[in-house]
Each structure stands twice: as C-alpha cells, then as structure tokens.
Length: 615
Image 1 (cartoon, rainbow, N blue to C red):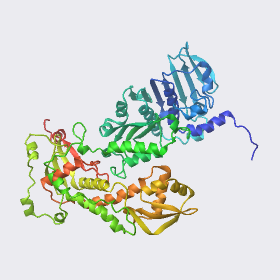
Image 2 (cartoon, rainbow, N blue to C red):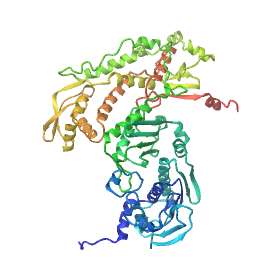
Image 3 (cartoon, rainbow, N blue to C red):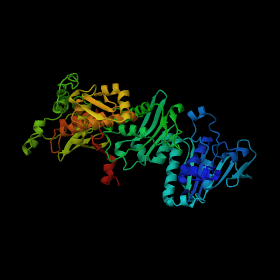
C-alpha cells in the first residue's frame, strides 16, 4: 500500500460524478432541478444525440451573481441550505451542492447567467474558470457538451442514442408532471418533442400520459393531518404489462420508495391481474421535517419518520377511490339504488341472515380446519341463495324447461325497451348468450356481463363483510416452536397487541425462539412458522395486517369462485336483473377476484360505426 495522500480536486469530482452522473438523463435531472429551484416560470431544453453530444437548459429564473459563478462550480457550495436545521427541512429539489462540480469534471460545461438587476450577463467556462461578458435577457443557460470526453471508459457504458434519449425524455416527464405551473419545452436534434404551457395538473397529466389514461383514471384527493395526496390512478382495465407509467412524487420530488409502492400495490389487490401493473401519477405532500431526502446521491429515495402512518394514509386514500364500482355509477358518478321491483327476490332470499362467524371466536379447545372453513361456506351459501337454486343448477336445463321459462323482458325492462322510462346504470337484461354472458340494455347502449365473474365478485365482497371483525381463533394442540432472528424477536415483542388482535397467541420460547399457540381459524392449515416469519417481516416494514389479510382473502376468493354461478346455467330475466342490481351495489364490481373484467359497455355510437350506419 502507498502512503495516505489527499486526492486531487479533479479526481474527487470525477469520483463523485460516478454517483451523480450516470448518463445524460442524470445531467438533465440536476440542471432541471436547479432551474426549478431558481424560480423559473419557463424552461427550454435542447438535446443532441440523446444528450451525449449536447444538453442545453435555459431558464428565466433568478440567475447567478457574477462573483458566485465560480463558486457554483465548487463542490459542496450551495445557496439552498446553511445549517443542519435547513437540511432536516429541505424544501428544494437540490441541496448537496456537488452536481455542477461533478458534471464539469466529466463534460465540457459552460454557464451563462444574468442575475436580477445586473447590467448584463456573464459566462463562465468550467474548464479554466474564465469569466467573460455575455448577452442574455435574464435567467441562466447551462450547456453540457461531450459527456465523458475525458473518461472514455465511462463513455463505453452509454447506450445507443435512442436509449439515452428515452431516459432523458422520462426525466423531462417527471419534472413536467411535478410542476404543471412551469412552461417547458423539449427539443431533440432540432425537433421540438414537447411544448407544455403552464396550466392545471389534469391538463399536464393528459399531455404527458395521454387522454386515454385520463379517461380511464380516477382522481385522488385526500387529506389527513399534515398529509395530503392527490393525483390520478388508472382503473384496472387500463393496466399495463410494465411499470413505465408509474409516477410518485413527495413534495414535488420524484421518488422510488418501497413503502409507497407497497401501499399502491395493496390498494389494487383483488382488482388487478397478477401479471399487470397500474398506471398512476400521485403527489404526496408532507411536512419536510417528516421526510429525510438525504439518503441517496441521486435523491430518488426518501425515508419517512412515520413510515406506517404514511403507508396507511396512501393505502386507504387509494382503496376508497378504487372501491367505487363503475357498475354503480350514474351520469353524475353516484352509486344508484337498486330498483325494488327487480330486486324483490333478493330481499326475500336475504331474509335469512348468514351465521355470525365470530360468535364462536372465544371457544376454547380444538377445532379442525374443516370446521373453521365451514363458517365461510355457510356465509357463502347464504349470500348465494338469494340468486340461484344450486340444486337446480346441478342439472342441465332441457329444451322443454327453456320453453316454459322464456327470457322475455317485462315490467320496467319492457317499458324502457319500448322507449319509455329510465334505466339503472347497467340497464335491464335482454337475454343470455351461450349460458355465459348476459346481454342488457341501458341508456348508453349494450351492456355485456360475464355472469360467473360478476357473481364471483359479489360473493367475495359479501364473504369479506360477513367475516370482518375479530377473527375466530384456532388453538393448536401442540404449540409451533421455531427459531427467528433478533429482528423478528424484537418485532414480535413490539407488536404483541397487534398480533393478538389478528388472532395470534405468540410468546418467547427461548432467546431466539417463538412459540405460537393459536392462529386465526381460517388460516389453521397454513404452515405456521412460514406464515409468522412473513408476518414479522411485514411488521418491520409495513403496517400489520397485509400477510394475514392476503391469506384469508385467498381462501375467501376460492370459496367465492366455487360458489359462483357456472357457465351453461340458464337464468331467468328476473335472476339476470337481480345480478345486475347487486353488481351496481357492490364495491369493486368491475373486476372479478382475479382481476378480470366483469362487464363492458358498447355505446350506440360504437355499434353504429360497426355497422356503418349514417356513413
């Protein structure tokens, strides 16, 4: 080993550039954030060859004084923080004061700026720190050319021009979404790609994520204490194969945070197919003192002081919005009440209330898994009885039976079909197609319903409601004893009350051993050690109930799937209408338990185009 020595400033900056300047998009991010922090109301970006050849960012912000231009290129020189208190309440995008120095160490960099009140602008060349007068009306222009010209080994890691431009475009979108009040323009190789005037957030989201996203999204607006969240989340029908349309901002800063990602994913549970990903643009506002942004050189990761509270706030805000079913929304977006004449047989079937599965929760002794699962079956059968006679459904209908019960609209359905009266959101049933789909007519046109998927969702939501509350408990004949890490032991001790509330009796059996003496009845056949380790891991990172709730819901979803009406089950018109009415009254009725759509709408305009009417 050689003797310890101080590194040259240039090498120090080049090392820092390895963390800060990964590719042209990293340069664009840092310079754009400086323009935003300078109070710019208009920013113009020009790129050449994906940003590798040239990046030019011009803003109309406050500018930099002549005497501070050289200082701006020094490491850890900044106007954004001055004390530890400032660091703990960072309200700007940048604050480290090392970005410009790192960029200047690996690219040919110049800064031209005119401060407010200055007679003219000044230009500094980062290579030799030389200053010269320049012409500029106001603001700052940063030009970065020939990225990694002096570090060819790093340049070899850059991708094709198209790939590097795509990363720059994504970086531009992040800043543009976060600040709709700023006008931005992006040009690549002389061609203007984006020209975004300042305006409302919805217009900016539509411009960057597409009108189709806005049309298939719901607005989120929620507030609680020092927390506020707003933005747009896509309906499950607009899901994507990748995560390329997911934007989450904390105090205007784009972040990738596992806590927030988990909250969003849990909000979409039960309504999104496992291989699909939602699209969203969400903006969380929090007291700067409640979030630490100084945890990553690129400032893309954050740490919350009250992580669980933030998780629950975001989760519940999104869950409330996504629980609203499009099947139950009228023209004004409000759920519609079921028509009493069409739901009469539902009321008759519901007169027999399902058993209370929690009534036996205090029973001691041994109860097998089949006994625990029987609670769910009884609740499912009670919820199903209102629609269909399962004994009859086991026998395929004959032609004579079909002739005796023709599917002919009557009552309000016939009145609406004849051009009179009004229809509920999903309209009135017309017929059944191949024993699988229900055809209905509403004010907009034709409604097509997958009867098994729709009934499955209805049963599933009813089961969750029936089994809500304190769970029934299954005591274990022999306690499950297993080893855990020190972190798991600490989590079990810290969250003992939470575990007890979920139906777990957990205590220490040794220095690094836990003993489980009871579990929720619906999870009695689950591998206890594996389940508890997963639960404790969740307890360390997220709020408490996700693992248990997910396992319980998996069982309820299976019950609902087996109990839902099957294909080739011939339904009468009243049965079909009853199913439509209950879809309108059920949360998340637009998707089945597996995330598949339950219904779709064909408007009269779409049908006219299909048959070329009026053309």
